Image (tube, rainbow, N blue to C red; front, top):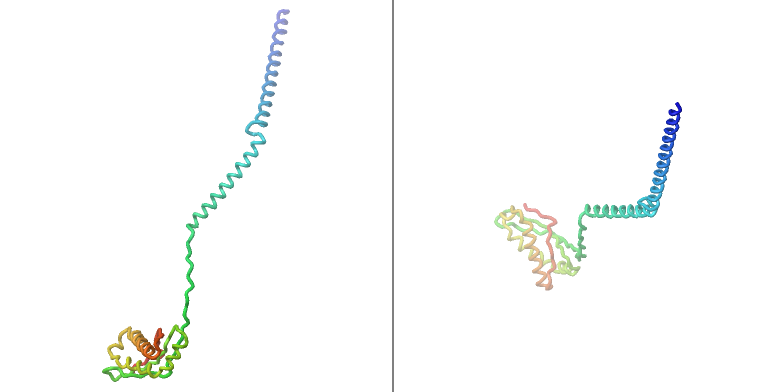
Length: 196
């Protein structure tokens, strides 16, 4: 029995020593872990200086994203359109003069009569209108000479009135050039046009 007690006393100290060694080793591991964590937090990738670098990186990425967004919007709008400035055009004031009495002429080889009332348009000043009034009789005579050459076949043509107006313009300008050395009539208009 005494031998049994001795064995128990020796074996009881061994587990205690073992527990003490394990506890000390655990404390050392915990201390090393705490020290390593403190080192990485203060000088490693989690240091406070690194936080400012992260903020700078985030700000730079935000600026790059804003520039990319602005560039994408610019590309979506397409290329800038070139605009041309329109030059200032000098517009002439149109002056009209209507001949007071209608002009009546017989149509060639027909029993029909053509009656027209004519207005004259010019871009020039009032001297042209004054010349038209001054030479009214000569102009009326020339217009009647042109009108008496119209035959019935021409009346049905679509361009008859335009062609007649052009012939009358040439006739009026020839009279004005003959007496005043300047025509100035730009267009002849019909305010009345009757064929019976």
